Length: 472
Image (cartoon, rainbow, N blue to C red; front, side):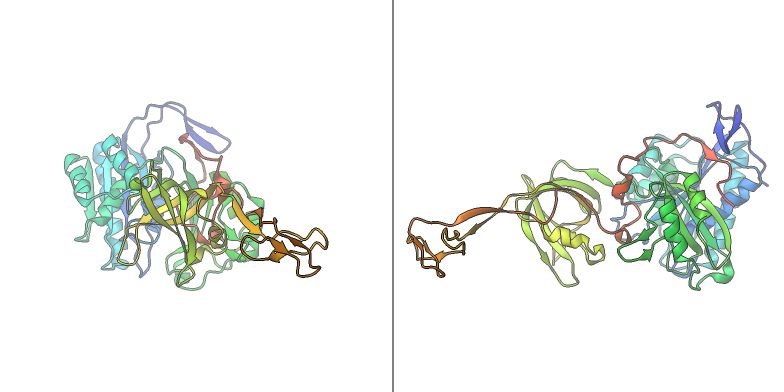
């Protein structure tokens, strides 16, 4: 049903890379978004997208990008754990063929969803035929940082009919937002890559058989080009999920070539059914926006906020550490939760007057707490001077003297020396925390959080170049 699309003015093959030599493409763009296809019963949105992508690639369909894995706003309360949506971007020979390809995707999605149906899921597919309009791109980018309403999604669908085709088997429309956002967010700024390897169905639900020694070896050999593979503090492998989904492991990195190298180092005790490379906004901090003041730290958004410590850290039930920062506009709580491990020890050392920049998502106020920034990382800009006042030292015997009474100076209990004019000595205490960046251990990282090791590696565009072997 789906023929091989064509239309590059010239395709250049060099060092395993396929690149467009001409910017003009003949044919019709087709952008397909998926969201909420997985469920607690199994399945995975990336699995569905990879099945279609690999099948189409084998049939000669022209992909104009790697499959995109777009992580959406992590502060949304009704999200799934990773809040990820997927998109495929291809060229069809004609508008009619693009419609046929969309129909094929919907048919495959219907079968997939039927197998893993769950009442708490809202599976959606959204196809856009033609170039993605700016309005939809803006919505896709905003869906990573803010709350997008269902009415806005429905309005976009209505406006762009018949170029846009949607499908769902759910009365809820929440999945529509994710599917449209995956189409609209074209990852035009900083991005990373993830190679996901999948399990054979015979192994679904069973413990994953991955050699941890090989994962630590892979982490060493690809350091700087892959990240968040292991947590050395806890001696823990981080590339494998724990649920019943079909993913065996996922390796995150800066470039596709590094992921292929990493794949070849990992040893498993079960077969890899398939693997595929996604381009993604993971580990980019795309969900965060810098606010002018704390009044702009709105609930359900991610922020970068500057302030002074206004209340000393305290530890509450569960091992969570809570403090507060303030500026000319107001005050907000900041929380370092128990899973952040040793990171809490750094937060506990902060004192009123310290100037900090905090990164995290904002929880709304409740009956038990005010607005709270869930801390993802922190930059200590300036430590306040910690001064403590000590009794003077006896000039005769070198022991610390004691007070003779208010206004009467000090005396030495050891040798009897007295100094009625002596007073306490101000001593600047050395702080046990340093200025600069601090982050949690790798095991505490969420999908969008950018580790410090990626600082300086950010990308500001995508070249449009794909490696020749991006799936198997």
